[in-house]
Image (cartoon, rainbow, N blue to C red):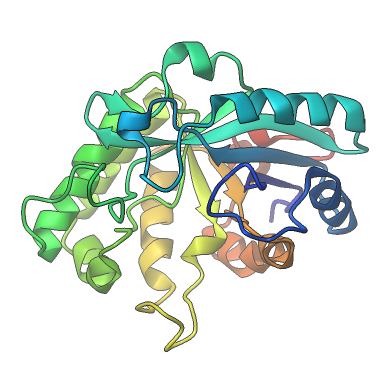
Length: 268
């Protein structure tokens, strides 16, 4: 089995949804080093225009420049990449542009943040089939955007959690293979995320069987996709969840060749 030596989906206080005051660059590096990681990626939410930003957040491009200055002064003992998590608002509409992407090491491009009801295009029908078709359409839009290096938490209907399992079940293996083959052809990595780990029953949202994301990832592997790992951490206490991915990786039987070059380290 491949070693878990990286986490390319970590938020800092630059993301408005990160409310942990301890989630500083210095602390993140220290915790990840102690976890045995060799490479991490800072992937704060990027919104360039007020018209495409949640009302209580606001655009934040200047914050990325400040974070770069902080990183340059830190000289961390592990490799730290500068990325962002951008959004697909609708096919052809995104929260960043090519010019901004070129200032970073990589872009995580979410295609399923449907909980941003007023900003992100919604499914035509709130049914398993309607949500499934919308997830496929938005995923392909992200892959074809020319912006994405990584697609995170794929085929998880944010904001429609109760439809997660039936929506995925309504997508045939053939459609998944064809869809993921396009991602592979564009060299867009698929994120294996701690978000896939089912929340305990009664913890604020619907839970699911781990076999649902496992099927999706297995088909992505069959289609030739390569992978990165990420916690989607918004707090120091969630960073150790990267190690919780081990049983999932074992079942996927990943090898070093399945890891995207962006995530590889000298120890991979």
